[in-house]
Amino acid sequence: MKYSIPYSNHGSSPIHIEDILLLLKHSIESISGNYVNLSRTIDYNSCNIILENFGSNDFLKSLIESRADYIIVATEFITNKTFNCFSNNSDYGKHSIWKTRYNNFIEAAKYARAIWCFYEDLIDDYRNIVGEKILFFPMTYVPKLKQFETRPFLFKDIDVIFTGGVTAYRKNIFDELTAAGLEIFTMPSNTPTYIRNDFSSRAKIGINLRQSRDWKYASLMRYHYHIMNKVPMIGEKCEIASYLDKYVIIADRSTFVSKCIEMIENKNVCAESLYSNFEAEMQCSNFIPQLIDKTMSFQITKCKDLSFSTRIKWQGNVHEDELVDEFHIITEEFNIVLWTFLAIRKFARKFLQLFHLKK
Image 1 (tube, one colour):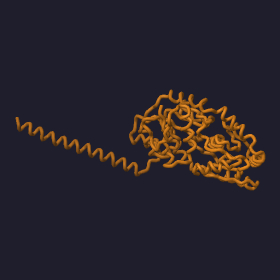
Image 2: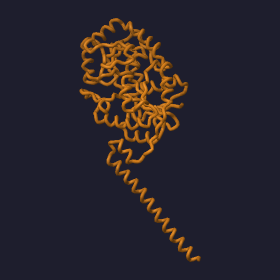
Image 3: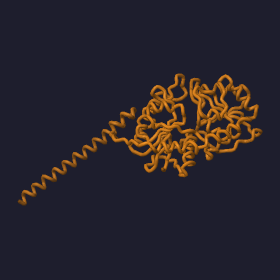
């Protein structure tokens, strides 16, 4: 099977999802022996692996109407028939945007070969809305994802590094770390890879924090990046544990700052053993082949009704000018059919007149 990873639904240069795309690409390449292409557009000759982000009507329309073979990678949390609707979450986008993405995901999932999810604890939630074609995709040890060598502890000049968005909740913890005398560097998700890698290689510890106080899940991609590159990681304890927790140090909110200080003072003596355990227990070849086999056993359902009236039911937010454009197109098509009919009728009359004259 040939695989392709389209990314245009995340923008023209989506550096913020680089880690996930490379995880998918190198995981499959390492067990299949075939190259997996990143692609700006849908590949009609491949099984497309698409990272969910169906806020764009244009992309969703082109995907479904293409009738291509595709898999969706689900990354968001299902809450009350939408994504990421947490009670005190004001730092993670507008709820209307998440609702649109959720609705469009439901429609795209109807015609997907399978749905993959990195979070084992979300499988049941997704199964309730997409059925049995939801599958767990574990983040495993993939040699090509090791991007740099960390410096010896003596030559590390950064105490703490955090890669990701800064929310109000996280900033409070950053301030506490600074007040405790630690130097902390924060790097947004669109930081170029070579800069992030350099700073991470110099960091004594990396940290993972919840987005808000009631956020339930850790960022597995952040865990995986640090684990693969042997950057000691301390994660704030979340309500729902993950399968990667055993390869990082977990600390409660109340003891998080003191745990960071303790780990730096102990010169990360446990980091090497955690990395070794991950390498031994989470080999890609022990997980991904079974996932691929199960995925390929599913049948594809292709969309049969591609009319505009059907599309607007699932798009939900079609602009008025799109409706006007569609009306103009339909009107023009009707006019062409009408004039063609009149021309044929006129020709038929002349032909009959000539036929009668000859008689």
